[in-house]
Amino acid sequence: MGDFGGRQKVFMKEINAADFQQEVLNGGKVVVDFYSTECPPCEALAPKFEAMAELYGEKIKFVKIFRQGNRELATSLGVSSSPTLLFFDNGKQVTDSISGGIKKSEIIERLDQMLPTDEVTAIKANQKATVAEYDVVILGGGPAGLTAGIYLGQAKIKTLLIDPALPGGYMGITHQVSNYPGFEQPQPGFMLAHYMSEQAKHTGIDFKVAVDITSVNLKKKEIVIDGFETIRAKKIIIATGTTPNTMNAPGEKEFKGKGISYCATCDAKYFVDKEVTVIGGGNSAVEEALFITKFAGKVTMIHQFDKLTANQTAIDELQKNEKISVMYEHEPRRFEKRDGKMVTFVEDLKTKELKELVTDGVFVFIGFKSNVSVLGDTLPESDSWGYIKTNEDRQTNLPDIYAVGDIISKKYRQITTAVADGTIAAMTISKEI
Figure (cartoon, rainbow, N blue to C red):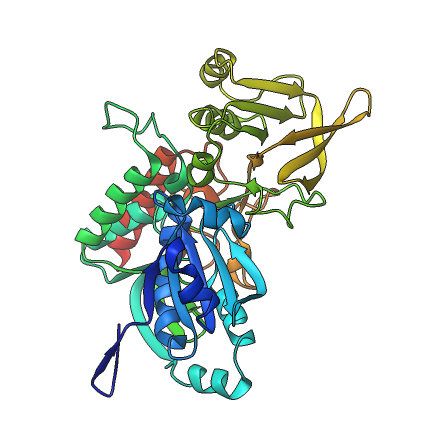
């Protein structure tokens, strides 16, 4: 909703397949959000989409379509991942579509392409630069950041948590967490993330989530979000976590969100009774492959070694699952799409033979890398793997800069160890402020 001259104007509406012709193809300039339920990236996109609708809504129409309830339409438009944004001008699709973890800057770039320069300039003029000051800013809303927020909030320290997605981090897209203390039965990761974030909110800390982190200056302790909002802090806790690794194989980038996925929780539900390829052999690959079998009829895993590297309990469960087969000592070399199917070209590492594996979709689970690229030019000291070094109080070598969770150099990366890190940093800060 927006209020212009006393008029209430709706900038965004929900439609279905029956409305598509009238609202989209005959609707002038339109951006369409195909979303799903139980989809953390969809939830992360929602506030960005709404903000863009308020900003651009007088020039471009914003509509949402529930993908699960309009599968035939989504398929006809080539939408195979949630969320996906499509852009239309007078019935024709313009610019490229974007899927998955969508940044606000990616949306703005495409919206600006749809409008004359003078109209873009006028819209940008409505964005007002702001400055806010806090005692502590937490960069990242995974279990480490949320726990730090809970302790700081309870200590009545003015705290802001910033996250480019929704709170929960990788925990939020883990389908099941079975080893977090306090729960008799395994918990869906998104629910555990929900419990933690709600607990943090109840302490009174502020949240800025689903935002673009434009810049970070750890020396000045300044953070700019969404290009126009500056946040200043006395202390910063880095809790930016890790990101799933990619293979950088030909075709991987092109088919991301269009046949290649990195989130079983988001996309496995679209492969009911279909065949799926899973790449990887560690804990995440095995656990996610088992989850995918709740939907898919057949799962073929590709693993570079002669045995899986997951824990034995997970391996035992996988070996009992008749839907899963493993191609040991193989590696993917490139990806293509043929007649709606994903073709993975796999090399046999023993014979060097190149094989074609044709399935309905590909899921990639090959480990993680530390998210330090967002932190600007002045970085804390790190180990040879790019993980931040801290002392026992989770202080880095930079004054008033702390680091917690999966981003730090340590032996084990679990939700429980992340929670401990957040506790330690927050208690240390509480005694200093």
